[in-house]
Image 1: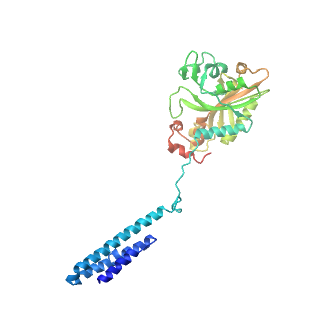
Image 2: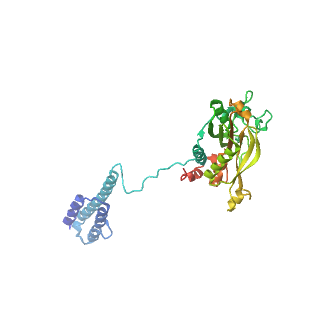
Image 3: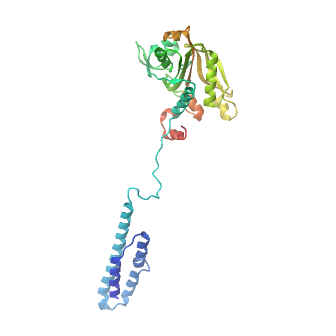
Length: 339
Ligand code: PHE
């Protein structure tokens, strides 16, 4: 019997395996409930007394050898798995690569730029910190105009006035000062107004303003251009122009687009009228052309300006303008699929 045990010890010592299943079978064969070791232990009581000592030592040795073997086989199998190479287990799912998303403001801004670039408008940009001339004076805003009030404008410095631009019309002034007609340019950018922050308005937002100056530009050209724009951006071609006032345009108008009244949201958005106000526009006041060094007898033009944020809220059914500047990833990630 002791001889058999010794043979088993040898067998255990020489055992090798390349996979977990074989190691497990081996473990069960020796160390399992119905394994050989338990058989030997059960045999113990039948062994004559004088052999008990040697027998006991042998089965303990067999048990220890088997335990060590199983342990070392497990370890070497694990090491092998790690050594499969830089690729590891090729069947494992890949590490997800987080893709960024464009900000809804950028999405809408890029769409607007793209639509106007198709009809020959270029993009012009200017500083967010402006002087009084480019933001107000050149644009025909009289000294007493409320927009010049501290309550509406953030002043960085007074006398001479330095301020955060309240519209990107300031860029149009810069553009006219440096370029002669024909001019076709749109000016996207961030603007600042001293307003209380709420779901509907913020103290900074984004605009795209457009400027078209050439010989014989008429109000009809303006209307045609805007109609092209609303058709391309919203898929809505019905617009109306309501008389309005801006110091830098004459005549001036507000542009409404007919959104429709098909759904409950349409009712809410348009306050039951079906119409949505989307921008201001008008024929550039000859004074503004003169201020910027353009001959107002020879040239005329139109200008328009719209808020990007409001359009982004409309197009993406966003209920609160503050979401646009809070940088909450749960909000921003929702725009992954939009280019
Ligand atoms: N600058 C105006 C605004 O900020 C918009 C506008 C631009 C209106 C050009 C008319 C012409 O509200």
